[in-house]
Image (cartoon, rainbow, N blue to C red; front, side, top):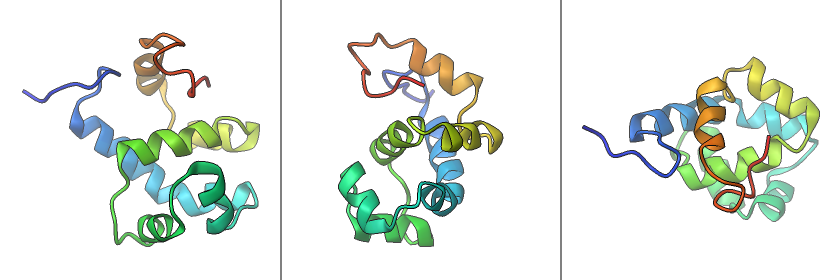
Length: 109
């Protein structure tokens, strides 16, 4: 049995969400009109790490996923794309909603 995190998600589920976002990261970043350097400044994720994730040389961590989701849900166009591309779905929404605003104030889609 896999351990669930504070969101009630198992490691395999978190990896699946990270994989989905990784596939769309370049497109979502460009929709915001951001370079990797600008995304680094906003998200706190280094440009080198972003480059490695975008090129498939490195896996996205759950921490990176959370930071990027926080950014992408703030913009209506990228938020819609998260839904359309199956990254933000009812299962993930329920997982985040299980947390109180105090436990996860940075994620409020």
